[in-house]
Image (cartoon, rainbow, N blue to C red):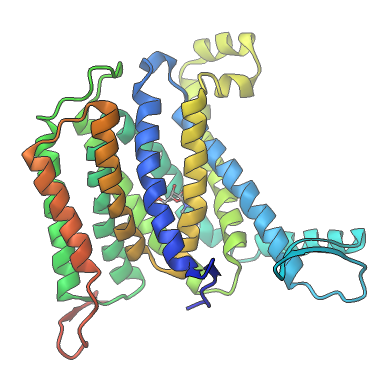
Amino acid sequence: TPAVPSICGMPLKYVSLVTLAVQNALLTIIMHYSRVSTAPSRTYSAAAAVLLNELLKGFISLVIAFVRLDRQEHTPDAPKTTLSISGVTIFRTCHPRNLMSKFRRLGREVFSPDCWKLSIPSILYVIQNNLQYVAASNLDAATFQVTYQMKILTTAAFSVLLLRKKLSFTKWFALLLLALGVGIVQIQNGAAKAASTEVNLMQPLKGFLAVAAACFTSGLAGVYFEMVLKNSPADLWVRNVQLSLFSLLPALIPIIAANASSPVEAAAAATKGCFVSNLFRNFGPWAWATVLIQVFGGLVTALVIKYSDNIMKGFATSLSIVISFLASVALFDFRITFAFTVGSLTVLLATWLYNQPEQSSAKGWKWSAPC
Ligand code: C5P
């Protein structure tokens, strides 16, 4: 396990987990609002949002990877100007010759022989990020949030299968309880009516299927990324750049396909403006907020996977249920039903149970994958 850095004395592990919980709640609410507050014909392109997310995340990761390379490099002969705050180097200039060698070194790290490994989680994450928009458009924020917790189940299953993690009986029981809680919330979903102010008609079944598929990709992509990250010495931020690079092509495919499927519309749109301005048509403040929160979430997720693990990540985001739930009541007129309350409490109980300290392995059952 890597040495865990801290922020203001608090371990980065916990800071990133709590940050992720808050980010998840915000994303669910804002994404939902950004999709349902305008008529479908006037809403922004989800595929364009996913592409923008990858471009921004990739660029930020590249800058961080470059800065970290700067810290690692030992070139005592080069003249440097260093800006440090409390002993932490914020900025350091160096000779242009060194700058070029750093670019080359970063290039070599990004295009390392094993970079192809990131193509698998990249494709899965692009599919997942697109599915999230389908789900957010067709389910109310609170139901989406609770149902999306099923990713804990898929993550645990893939952790056992791919990472050979062993889970105690209590943990498996907590996972079952989680599935039960999500089921209860889903049953009431048909009964609870969405806010009358929302102009977009929601299709709960379509939303549920999208979340179910997103849970599958979330579990597989997260565990695969963890496996690649923890089985090689490559820097987290270099891995993130690779992830974003491999995401670009799959993120472009739905955009190209949409243009190809409606060539008349595409041609009409093209006469009105350039490709980029057409792509980001209807991108209002809420669409931008959704993308920026998603970018932030992607970066925090990477930190959580590095300093904690995927299963813990899932449970941390369960906390965001409470935040989304209260916000849905306040913002979207979400009606609290008995089933929703019971289902949400079951999910929270499962979260608590899963995080109970382990008994010694001699006492507890340990189930693992047969392989
Ligand atoms: O729902 P889940 O936690 O699986 O979502 C993970 C999100 O974090 C996805 O949007 C994915 O694109 C992003 N991510 C990232 N960088 C990583 C791992 C995940 O941007 N290294």
